[in-house]
Image 1: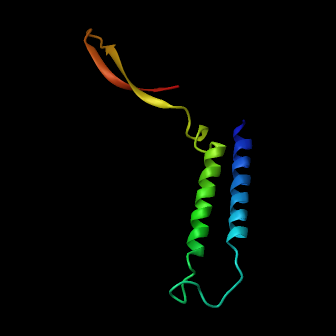
Image 2: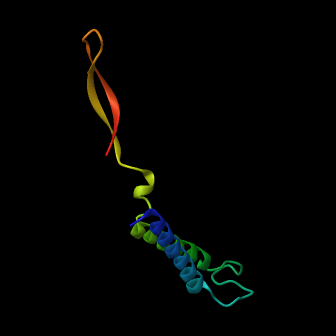
Image 3: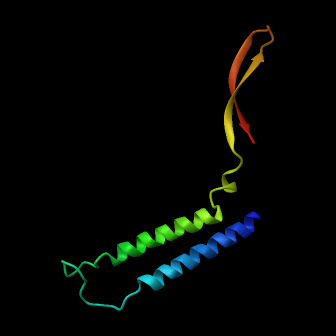
Length: 97
């Protein structure tokens, strides 16, 4: 799958999850809150935010948003080399797949 298609798919999934969160968490307006304190929202805002974060994380994981965007897998490898006097030295070299 190309990078452009993957980005578009991720954007569509994110927009759909935000839309679903708004629809699911919408409630009729009330002058007074719910719960023990009259001005608290009863956790509705927190539930909406946490639900949106969860749906967004699932969508990003399903779309592979963290895969190819960070480049190839790289690591450090010890390599031995010899200087002009014939002495052996080791150094760490970055090697990418």
